[in-house]
View (cartoon, helix red, strand yellow):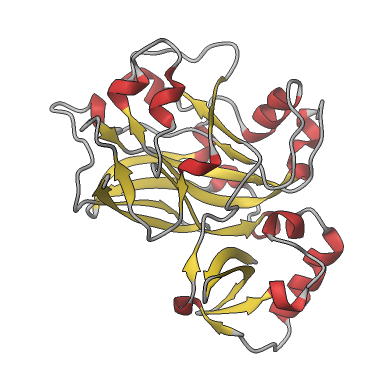
Length: 284
């Protein structure tokens, strides 16, 4: 099942994508406030699946809505750096004993199709194609062997980074938190649709040219380990996002470096999940 958040006629909503249409789950499940609430409610999720599987007519076309980031306002976005061995090598880093964790703020997110924004203060705007995990069941002190029970589904993420600001200090979170630089979508594919996330591949395409490629089996710290590790410090909550890291091929490590500029389009392609596509624009 593919689930989306959107705005239609100025009003927020959420629904299930069926072919090229949307089943309006906000209307059909009025007790559920938003997509984060839906994925935390197994009864409501079962009803949503029933509606998708039944011969229920679409309420409107997918093209008739303005998509929002899959979870428009996640409580937290946990990102992982240097989580592919080949990417660690190109960055001149080694994979350590513990995952490299940093955070994004929800206000940095944009949706599929919306422009990602190169900031006024830098031209060192880089791309990072990633698989994002959407948490459905919260909890603390989660064991790795139980961690996948907490996964609602998966989506695509571009952790676009302002590289010079990222390296102003040894803590590079500022370069990851410029307005309008992180894109998330186009939809959430529920976990039951993905037999084994480690069989997924990922590509990052700049203007149609492949820049990045990787396999989720290549993660240095796998998804269960990451969920378990973070849960020792923070309670996971429904709708939280875990960005699993980017494969090799990033722009600033190329010779010469390749940075995003206005007029470019960057796509995150994960077969079985979808394609997240965003044009690049300068900050107004």
